[in-house]
Image (cartoon, rainbow, N blue to C red):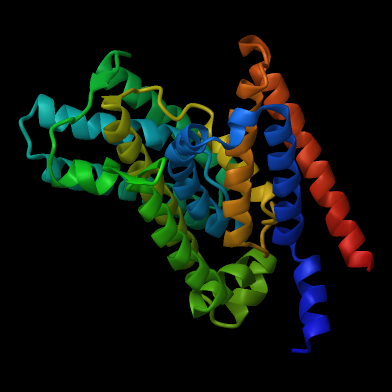
Length: 326
């Protein structure tokens, strides 16, 4: 492809406008508070980023196929709670308990996928119901009290929530999980046949099925993958803060969808971008961190977050429209 045409294609891509917005946002917060770009603050932002970002990767694939999952926040809370109960009350080995937690996530994702594809109920209604079931289960089995998480040094703590320093910056091993899973998701969506199937299903399911795409099987596995990623993120978070709370992840489902859509993935399916999702995750993390630094009152916090996300979506849509015209 000629250089000019390649450059024009890059400018028209949804992730490019998202990146422009992110750079503007970072510049505004950096000017408003000089501590925004300090090593300590960047380290704090990067500690939270991978946990929501990992869920957003699964949600991107699912949204590209034309579905979404509202139960991810509840799964984020339930998975570590179940793991810690198995360790503390049943005396299970931590490794076996972690495996049981992931199997539970697989079961939740499979139930979501089977009901959506085989019975034909919309993913909005199915996963909204599952959100209530999973959150209610987490509250019931803990009686609403948070549990102390596994904090003994060892292989799994290092694997999921170990930390390391790069100069003045402190990062967690969850960042490597996020990078590795992002690269895998990029490969799936851009270069693998499965990625073509996912986009085709989201664009026109009937046409995809007519061309031999196993649409139901693909969707079921995407629901499972999204649920497993939510459970994995919950376990990483619980290990990092040494606590497993039944209400952890409340509201994450909407925040993750916002990350994905701000990044340029179409809410109606058929078009998805992992790079855009990474930019969207950085953007929302920067917004949450930046408005605290500039002194937004705590009770008005969500008002500002919502308004900024709305403004970002409008700006993103306008940039996309202008790029399409040019």
